[in-house]
Structures are given as C-alpha cells and as structure tokens.
Length: 185
Image (cartoon, rainbow, N blue to C red):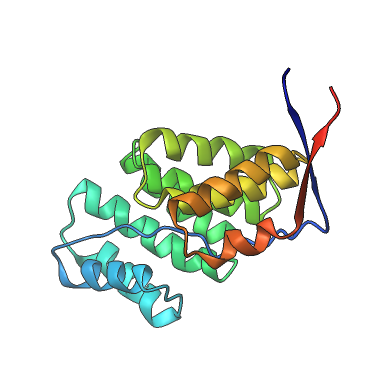
C-alpha cells in the first residue's frame, strides 16, 4: 500500500528569510574586507563601499571579481534593494556563469520580489552548480514553493534545510506552521 501525505500550511510567511550566502574572496585588501563583511552578515553602506572600492580599484581575477559582485549584491539584498542587487548578481554571472552562489542569491532576490518561478529556476541552478551553504538555498527554495502554492515541496525543503543545519532556528520556526497527516488513497 502506498502512503500519501497531505501537507497543509497555515498563514504563509514569506520573508526573504535571512538566507543569503556570501563568497569568500582572498587577496586584495578591499575585496577581502568586503568578503568578511558579507560573511559576517553586514549590510551597512560602509561595508558596501569596500566592495565598490575593490571593484573599482583592486586588481581582481575573474573569480574574485565575480565573488565581490555577489558579496555586494548580498549586502544590497539584505536591505531589500532588489533592482540594484539584481544588477550585481547579473554582473557576477556574466563573469562566471558557473558560480552557484550567484545563481542562488539571484534566486533569493527573485523570491523577495515575489517572482517565485524565476526564483525557483535560479535556486535550482545554484544547487546544481554547487554552493557552500546548501541549507540556505533549500530554505529559499521552500519560500519559492510556498509562493507557488506547493506546500508539500516547501515542507520537504524546510525539512532538508534543517537536516543540513540542525541548529538553525529559521526552518524550525517555519516547520511549526505545517500540519502533516495521512491522506486516504
């Protein structure tokens, strides 16, 4: 006998869940400081200016330049500056179309813009290419699925995010909204 599950969610909470992944950049001073600021979760204009300074003046290789665009885009995304973050993620992808973090963060940007189908496509591309913090991508993908009214897929992605990072409060909180029960065949 095949068991089916009915996943129901109460009161969808679509906040661009603080789940953005920065890129580690070593080397030139401003680019490395930008990277450290993005990884630390900073989004202040001073931190962003480090990224801009690195892009304008540092001698960066293609990968570090793309990573610096991602880091600056992440800072803008944290402030919900979607259009500006979109430009940075696109610039990163123009330099390195195989950078999973650029796809994943652009996907998070789309989710913030309530463009869930585009978000899902970019998040899936980021996962396929590989990212360092998969749990964040699964969390954002769960938000995209919720936006597309696919509660079952959202539930499983929240679960997967929690399996990847068991002490992360954000997916735990989201999962509290779900009720899972057996559905008659």
